[in-house]
Image (tube, rainbow, N blue to C red; front, side, top):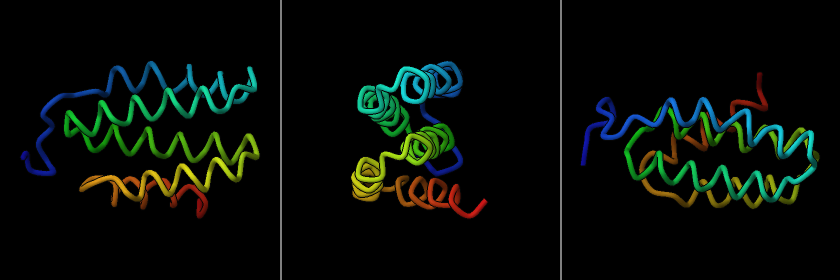
Length: 102
């Protein structure tokens, strides 16, 4: 396993391209569940590649779109899923929760 400072697979370009796409799907096209599913796929790629920074960006986006779309049940279930992931997700859950305190 890599240290927390060393990325095995840098997903930052993919994440930077996909986040606006999924945000539009959720908020403009009103397809929240589809966006959530797409973001969880992206989060898994980051987790498997041990790219914790990009994973936390994805988790934060996931929480943000659920909140902005007023999908509070989906927000709750997404946070529960994120909190059950291994290792990095403790950080992801912390970073995504910080969204509410900004």
